Amino acid sequence: MIKSMEVIYHLLETLLPADWISYDFMKNALLAILMIAPLFGLLGTMVVNNGMAFFSDALGHSALCGIAIGVLCGAADTTPVMVLFAVVFALALNKIKNSGISSPDTIISVFASLGVAIGLAILSGGGDFSKYSNLLVGDILSIRPRELLLLLIVLCVTVLFWFLGFNRLHAVSVNRPLARTRGIPVNLVDNVFAVLIAVIVTISIKWVGLLIINAMLILPAAASRNISSNMREYHLYSLLFSFFSGVTGLIVSYYANIPSGPMIVILASAVFFVTYLFQNKARD
Image (cartoon, rainbow, N blue to C red; front, side):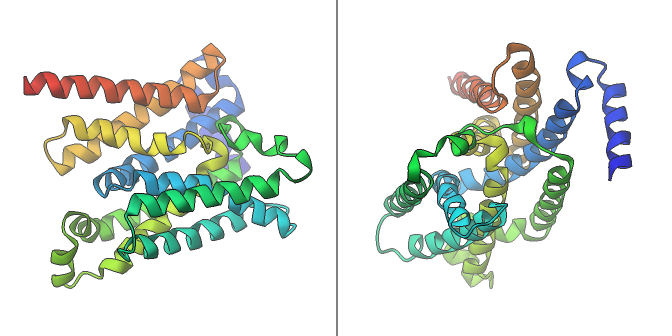
């Protein structure tokens, strides 16, 4: 593992002869961005298509509750507990959302509010919430090599899911009754996608931040949707915008001495508004 990282570090320094890449934490952050960008770029397209922006936001906020449960259980590393809670939370939310008992946005808002409230109530016990406050904005510069390996595994699983299940997922997002008549297990596809979002959002929380992770997931896809004329362009532009805002935001944050997460979101927002204006101009 150490030798492999040394080779990768040397390759990055060769390809990018700049002062910012001379630091190991910047190399790790760049590698993380290069893996998080396609994750968010791909998943974001289906999140936007399915109108699940509030869903992913609720998952992000529920991470506080997962962390709190891990703390109560005395776990040294709360990540596994947080991921498990997020999966259960996503499946429960999906079940209630699809039951038709109430409007989806109302159900999602209730779940999100409850998750945040429980998490804050537990973690603020004794007035010691300060050590968890870094989760609000994240810190991509703190990522370590073994965590990069975890990201790589998640990326491979996501790409595999995309190749094997995209057509079914797209059919479900376009017309659920029609997909069901074609023999597609609608509920299973829906739940697998929800679990995938839950895992990715939860794993990325500590590097991206609770407050902005949904923006990083939604903005590239939303910008892509503004200018795409077909599904191929939709995915391609989403990936390009995600890579651009991620890598450029990391570099700009280094020179401007600004947290990387907010800088990435600012750039992604700028891309969205540019594509939005371009779309309106093209219609005129």
